[in-house]
Image (tube, rainbow, N blue to C red; front, side, top):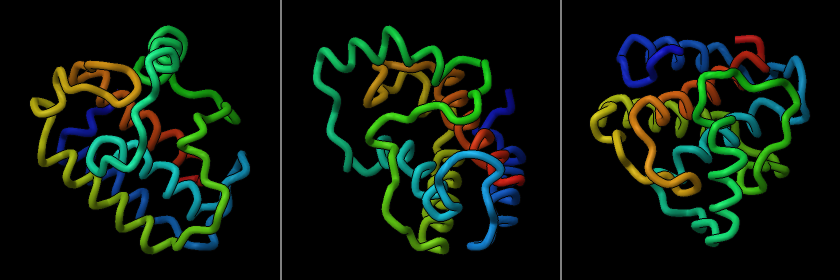
Length: 150
């Protein structure tokens, strides 16, 4: 899997994001392009913005047991998987705002680097190593950018 912490990979992902327009249609799924960008921002909001509540003990236990490996493992996501409630984006979003936010989050993540994330606590999954953080960040973005053909 590509390493989102490497400048050239971050640049490649940003170039893909920049190919999107408000009129870009999805190849599968229900979200429009603005909602998808907002959906991808949730990962970074959980890391940087403290805008999402921490899961309660039992829910966190279930997520670690049944969802963690799907999210942080090497295996790509399948199309049309159900998403966690905090990642559901049902309202309309402003394309340019969400796009700018995502690019800013990506640049911040790359600048902080993998050393910053190695052993850092995830809101939902506990401590993750740098490879798990990378897999979670890159795999999710790659999945949704592919969903929109970029």
